[in-house]
Each structure stands twice: as C-alpha cells, then as structure tokens.
Image 1 (cartoon, one colour):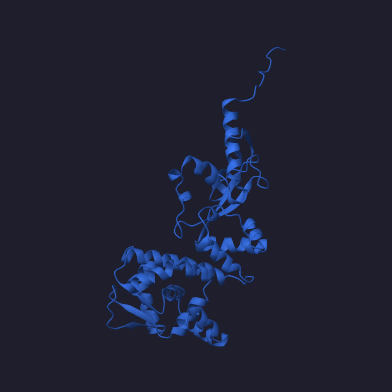
Image 2 (cartoon, helix red, strand yellow):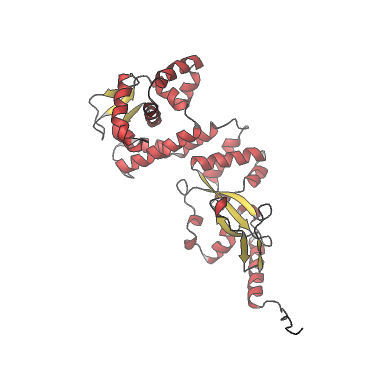
Length: 316
C-alpha cells in the first residue's frame, strides 16, 4: 500500500493521537523525526546524518526518539551504515510524512537525494540503494506531490504528464502557461498554478523574458525579476526603449535539465539557425520558418544598409 493511500485511510482522531506523541518531544527532535519519515519506514543513520538540518544533534535525537518509542534500532543490518533504524509503527511514519507541508516534503526529498549521491555515488552497487535514490529523485514522486498540492480539474495532471513524457524539445522550452491552457482546454488560473507547483518541485524552471515589441523575439531572460534590466536595445530590429512589464515581459517555463536535458540548456552548442530561430523565440510566439527567414533577411538588410538620416544643421 502506498504511503499516501495508507494515511488517507487513517481516521483523523488516530492521526491526532499519533502526532500528539511527537508533539511532546523537543522541537529539534520533532524535526529529526520528520526528516527520517521522508527517508522511509526504515532508514540508515548515515543517510539521516548527511541530510539532517542539524547534523550535530542527530545522535542525541535518535536516542530520544528511541526512548519515546517512535523508532527502534534494527539489529544485524548489512547496510552501508553501521546502524539502521525503523519506525515502531508504519502508520506513525505515514502520518508524520503526510502532515508535512508540500514545500517541506519537496525540500527534504531533494536534500535526501543529494545525501544519497554523496554516500553511494551516482551508480550505487546495491539494488536497494539505487531504488532509494530513484525514489527521492524520481519524476513520479514529484508528480505525486503536484497532484496532491490542490484539487485539479479532470485530466489536468494527465495532460501535463503527456507534455513531459511525449513533448518534443521545443514544446518543453519557454512554455507559456496561458498558451498551454488554451491549447489543452484548461482554465488559465489552473494552468498557472500547475507550472508554479512544477517549478517549486524542481520539474520546471521559471524565467522572465524580455520580448521585442517588433519581432516578439526574446531579447533577454532572467531567473528573477529583481535582475531585470529597465532598458533594452535590440540591434537586429533596430529598436530600443524602456522595459514595460505589461507589454514586453513574458513569464515562461522550461523543463529542468535534471528531468530532461534539452539542447537549449546549452546555447553554445546550438547552430546559428537554431540559436536565432528556436532559442530566441518563445514557444507561444514562434513564427513559421519562412517568416523567420524573412525577418532575418530584413534584419541583415537594416544592419548593412541603414536608412539615411540627415545630419542636424549646426547653424543657428
């Protein structure tokens, strides 16, 4: 039985009683129990020690959790760690895990996955270690977190999964959530929520794109709005001006390179054609190839043969 399914079947009164046992413990020990619960019903002390927020207090915390009969040490384990522990009740681990905030769970999964990589390397020798590493880094676990983040309309999650698994490279680069909503008959607020949750889970990365008002090409892209430049210059279209948030900024989302590596994650590797035609145009505004070629030819013409501009007279 999956953890979320098990927790959903536990009555609220039982969950409250189980959590009350944890609430009687010191704050640091409760946090340690939460971190252990994200690892799973059974965990190595070495993994918990490498992923814990306060590593110096792990030993003392484990002792207190054992005294409180929250966890117990497993004898005779052949783990890479010298000691292995398990929750005294699987139900208790389920309840602790499911009562964590979504953002906290995502953060801990990432931290535990990084700790596992440090301990076991990218290619663990033991099958169970490989499975554990895959659990904390797997897209399936992240999709489950997104699915449980809120109540979604029917088929929203399946449409999003189809984009990730079946979409080509271009369809996963600079995705506009409003265009995604329009093309797949999804409400715009729901589509925006979907990509924001996907960004928080690490499946996508969000960027602020400055779009040329003439050609709709992306002049620049920023990971945070605070780094946005207030003035733009674009030589190909011979335009310049002040950046207007309403007219020249487009928020887009690109699949994370940890989930799926795209050629656009490494712009230096692209051909001149792909750099100009595919990288620079957001997906929702990308023209057909013929329009792009005409725009490029016109841009080169403007650069080589600029229109005549009379020199202002210096006489009074």
